[in-house]
Image (cartoon, rainbow, N blue to C red; front, side, top):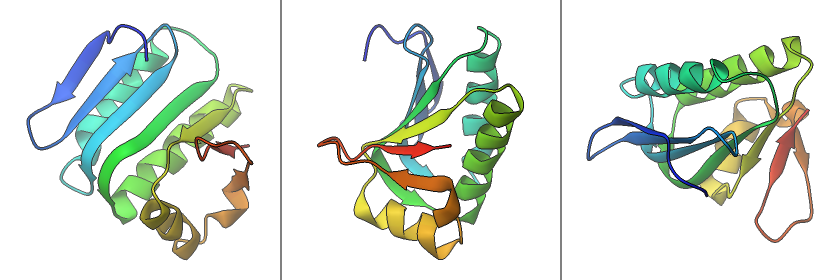
Length: 120
């Protein structure tokens, strides 16, 4: 990750933006209490213009239905703009949440070492 442009949240949950690399790093639990912070941070990234957006899940400790909803909203926004969303460094428990939520049709598993999942 390059220089972080902005932090949103607090010690328990935060979102870090790298606008140059169009990367959103999530740290902590992505649930109904934290998705408003996540949604606001992602909106800030969209104000910088179009392009591929990366969501880094490496430091996510929990992902609930509200978190899935936020990812789907970002996916839909990207798709409407003719762009893509890619998820990176997804822990196995988060991948299971996506599959259990019926979102496996959005996930294209790639073979990269970093466990990248591209959302088409």
